[in-house]
Structures are given as C-alpha cells and as structure tokens.
Image 1 (cartoon, rainbow, N blue to C red):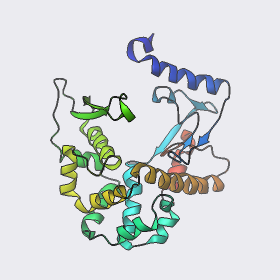
Image 2: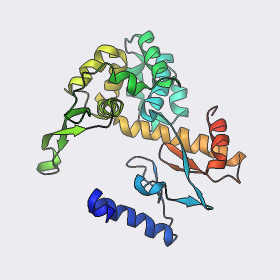
Image 3: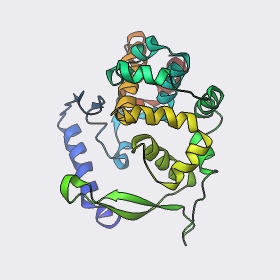
Length: 275
C-alpha cells in the first residue's frame, strides 16, 4: 500500500524484481562494451528504495562513492591533454574511444592552461563541492514550495527516431542537484547546446568546454568515453588491487560506488584513495 500511494507501479515492479532475484539467488551479470562498459548485476539494477534493506552476512551494505565521478575522470583526460601525454590516455583506456586524429587535434588546441588547472582543482578539492559552487553562479528560480526548478527539453519518445522534444519543468530538492543535472547535460549533450546554463559555463571555463566540444565534434560520446575510463580506473584497477590485497573482504560495486559492509568501510576508503 505504501507503493500504491507514494510510488508508481514501475517502481514497485523494479523493487520486486530485485527481491525475487536475491531470494532466488539469481546473480547474473553482464558487461556491455558496445554501450557503457559498466558492470550490470543485481545491485546495479536495484532501486535505491530497497538498497538500505539489502544485507550481506546480516550486515547492511554501505558504499564508498566518488563525488562528481564524471568530472573526476574528465580531469584525468584534461591533465593528459595539458601535458600532451598520449601514454596516460592509453593507460586509462581513453584510447578505446579517442583515436589518433582526435588526440592530435586535442594536443594542438590553444587553451588557457591556468583555467584548466583551476577547474580541475575545483573538481578535486575534498573540502568543497563543485556542483554547489557552480550552482552559486546560476540564476535559479524558486517555486511556491521553496524548491529550485528549471525548464528542460525532454524527449517525448514518439516520432521519427524519438527526436521530438517538449519542455518540462523539473523540480529539485536543492540548487546543488539542479547544478549537477545541468553539468550532466553539458557533458553529455550536443556541443551546440543552447541551454542558458551552458553560456555561464562557457564564460567561466571556455578552455574546458573547448576540449569537451572538440571531443564531441569528432563524433565521440562524452558519457561513453568517461564510462570507459571510470570502468577501468575504478573497477579494473583500484577495486581489483584492493580485492587482491584483501581477498577476505566483501566488495562489489554499483557503477561509481564501491560496496562493502560497515566494518570494512574505513579500510576500503584508506586503501582506495591512494590508488
């Protein structure tokens, strides 16, 4: 009844699907190199509503999350571009998407190095949140309930190639989450996006946007590129190194979040950070 009143049937169905999988011990997984190269399994497909009820050895699961994960791994690419370091791009598996022509063009861009370094430091700083900082540069309207909102172009899912769009008002629980959604749209959207927030980002980080748009203009999907880098750096390298060193520790992942149980969380955080 809680689902009937508070959530859609789709949410209920999703939660029940996960419950049945766990109860029946159906632990299938897949990795889709042609889509996002991410690991998809029972936990990754679980609704956040029921994750807090999932246990391992009678303990609740907890996560070590990477804040601003897309931007975090984009900074690794920015560093390689600044240093004209193709070896680093190869090592982080960015060359799964970036070909020699694109890399050559990136290395020849006339960019403001100080601006790119400043952007990277703002993303990587532990004591500050990039999305919160960026939200302070946006003109965010507030609705009658005191919540921030913005108008967003949403695919209607109908018409030829699903390219028919309509405007929809999206409400957020904080300016920070609004800014995060904007940033995701800037990263993953067209290089010719006309959303007003992109103009603000361009004014503040023109060289960063130039690098991003150069990649897009060579037909490369930013989200796919960053997923490749994330999958390798976070899972194939960092998580694998940890599991080899501590084979007795329970560890799995939900995309950019490593999952364990409370007694191992401090150890996981301590060991993963240097990696």
